[in-house]
Image (cartoon, rainbow, N blue to C red):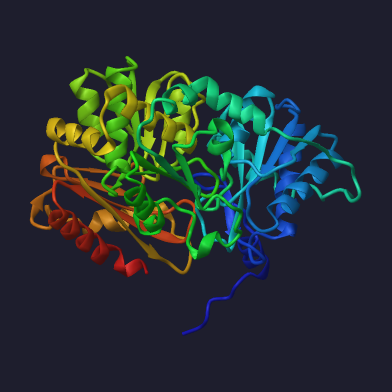
Length: 477
């Protein structure tokens, strides 16, 4: 059989392709995320901003605590400035929500060098506008601008730098009143920064002896674990919560926009537990009224909360930009996603781990309940939730539409012995079963992974669904 000829130019283009996924562009440093490729992105941003159809906005550039993140940020600043664009570079590492705040306050395009929760070997670029992630329309236009023009000479330029940490602290104080609620604490609160960009911020904000900060120092290797606030990475936080008899444990990811909660009993609360707790509080105590939205990878309890209070509910594709857009346009008032991002009316339409953590403290103080009691109340009223996610690494990217079509062809009338009630292919394939139980299979938009998710009312049922999903995706590994 003759070997198919490979077009060298097509192969070169594919190898150098830069694609913005569900939340920016990311890659492995020294392989994908290189100074050369960062320059290509910077020049594309310049071309986009200089287009006659766009206002040549000023740009504020930030960076997290990753290896050489500040150098990548400086390189982008130099290229933008060489293109005649006004640029300001932050003088310290900041979490991504701070750049969102600045994009809104300064009426600027915000750029931050971060790979979020990804391993220490990765880095990336996120773009913010009007206080939230830029739309897919904008990232599509940026991708079309890549390599359109050559990068101009840009060395030895003086770049304006400014500290913006106070701007972010002022935003948190205006939205969360942390001093008021933290002052009423009778038990400690433990916050785990996972060595990320939010390290020490809450301590600087509050100066409260009841606040215990862990993993707050900079470590570009993140202590040897991915800076992702999922249960398997939070053993130090669990242990400290139990040791200190703390009210709650709050964990933030590498760039501070995601959050996880450890309750007063040292138990991890999944996002499918956290979101209905938040929604119930915002609706009943803060009196928010309007549509509730969540990513398709979230569970069934938030929908039950919304319907109990006569509110609309909608599932959206994975990627917080979809949630942020719904809230930013006024279509929705509360939104959440499975990876630990939440937003609600009254704040910027952006996920913010610190803001959500402070909301949890407020909930405990105002309701006079611990996190475990808040969850027990939800469980008693709306039902049990056992949610889990299992990821499978793949060797190369998969076309989501092709994957979805293949999975749908394999479906029978039952899954793990349960009749299929409905199938949604909004983002991957989500199968609905009796009792609101479900299983979802989808290729990740940010990593070379196929993610499988399931939620039922018992660990045994959830495991059965995940095992079935694993068999179905096995042919793609």
